[in-house]
Image (cartoon, rainbow, N blue to C red; front, top):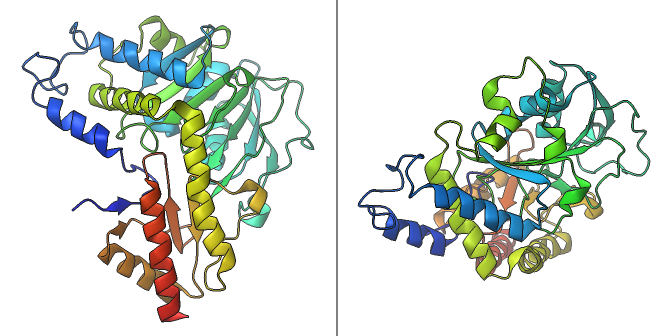
Length: 357
């Protein structure tokens, strides 16, 4: 029996996509081979990468002056790739709004003067600093942000307008809402939340920014090398790219990013409205900055939190345990989570409250 998987990542994928992959798994496109077995140099594989790029460009309205890369190593590897490709004068600004934003800044410090120009750590990352009141440095090579906080459940209501190129880790919300790509110098995202199984990372970078990586930059982290070779410089994560393309096709069928955002807002509204109306559950995030992808909440005690997770699992609502830094519960309701899944969760929450309040 299929369950409703509320994992923060790797997350659930659309059932239609899984079924299509299942049908093609042993024989992809009449090759007599699984896509897992096809060489990335085979003429049957190149169209996968090309179509995936084309679909992503269409869905996000990515101009040609930006390259689209499919790389390995996860978003965490990009924490190093960003300064190695962009920190030419040795100075960069970081806005720290959660655990992964902090890790990105800590990695940046290895390669230069990475400065925290704003942080929400003072209130356990329950808000996003006012981007209009931040003192940005004129000498920064870039400004780095993490648009959605997977662990603590916040997101930017508006993005900073900066003189330096804006670099954004969009891992846990890419393709969940419309963004103007031209406002960013670089966008990167691990695909295992809204796009594909773990293994592939998307990098969208303005071409003029990637021409001169630092001399110490390893070849595999040079965005220009990947761009010049169409993401095929070495063996890429073939199956994950294939799956990403199926998800992108699926998203286009649903009406694109605008349509899925409307569904996402509705799903999040169902959950937040119930939490706000309850005296049993609590979400501590400032409402203006609440994520529509990751919804953390707690009951009145840790013991009840543990009971909640256990009983939810027994009825097919799985992976609801919160991150160890936060505790409680976290419902990750990415694009692939159907409305019905959120409704089932709310029904269970109501029942659990009646039985345990």
